[in-house]
Length: 577
Image (cartoon, rainbow, N blue to C red; front, side, top):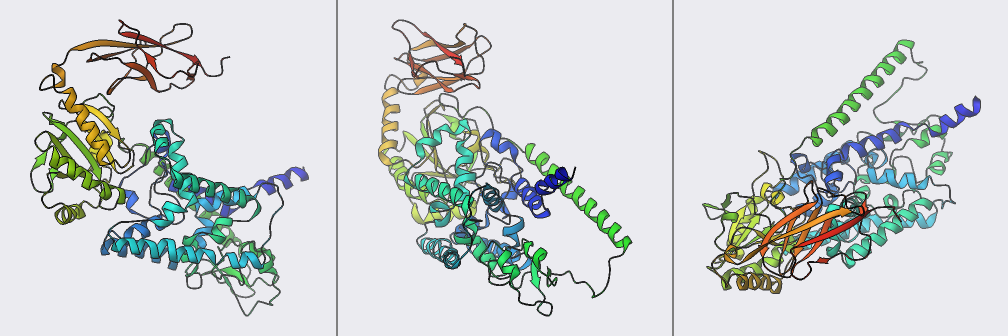
């Protein structure tokens, strides 16, 4: 029985561990984002959460303070004051208590460190390395973003080139969902570097306690500057201290004294202090006073009520975000009709992208997005060369839309581009309705090409250049030479059937047929997907593999046999020999 009690005592989570777990769940209460594979962009994303929690994490309900600070340098004075004020508030109230009690990435490192391996204890080298995070703060969070802000090219350097929390939560969090398979084609050397850095930090954290927090985290460096003046945290009573050094020796961080800039207020030092000189700030006990039984009862009741309220907040957050408006379904696949909306033009009036009658390039962009602004001159060139035959509509995000008109007037005063603004999905929401309806998943820039009938011809989930735009426009124009509309060309009826190896139809499978362009549809209860398209040499493919199935061979494209308009794709159950 004694052994069982000792085991339960070892595995019982501490208050700090429960706090870390609680806030990791609360900061990522948008559980639906993990299922749908997209980023929440609602009202709460305007608030920075304390701790390192990436904006692009599918579950994140708030913004990362480091990312917000880097972006604020290019976003205007009011945004900079707002983000700076939030960071100042967190610093004055909590200091690095944020790191020890609230930060999700700190929790991940501590759990990795619990793996039973030899550990590297702190020493003179680690104390010197702890200064590196101040260099990263000065260079990657402040100097580089400020320099690029003067060039009108926002560059969140730390997020882009270093942050392992962003790679884990945002990058891998999105790529883990198969609906984002198209993102894989966008990965390049920067992601490879950041992935290797993430792996290095993860492996290093097994042997070195909170490796990233101690040596690389600019947020910890910034908050540590407030440790001495913060309202909450640990403090040392000089009158009671005998300078035995047990507190510093017991601490796994590179502290020199209790509560200095490296201290995360974990409270571990309190248990080893022989004189009780280390206490929580704002908690003072009168000498010789013993706690009364009634005070103990009040404490138990207070803890119970606090725990219940915290649990109610967490459950409420999960329920709230699970019921938030989802991106509009339909009208976002190649071959489907573009959703019909009316957008406000910066010059006055409205535009209907799906109205048809001409080829339409819809470019979703933002003044805060450097790749967006770099590709706009190519769209301007296309708009000028094909004026009267091609519409180019540049749709600015609802976020910071007030900056769009000045930017367009300064850089494209005589442009044939129609500059419009997306509309929020609901009053006050930050989610862009038209962007979401066309399948946008948080990536900017994003370009959608419509044919003259308002049907989606192509989509680009990253920046595009002039040659790409010119090629797709010319391909559409060649297809229109037979008449004023692609529907005037001869059409055929094509069928794709999806079955298992016993011939049983598999419904709700997303398939497409492709030639010069692609058409997409889902199979019905009979396993068939039907297409009406211009006669061409098409091949069929499964674009989203149904759960529990796989292709029996390496073949991924299935051509229609000569003289036939039907093809059968056979899938096998995963795990079958």
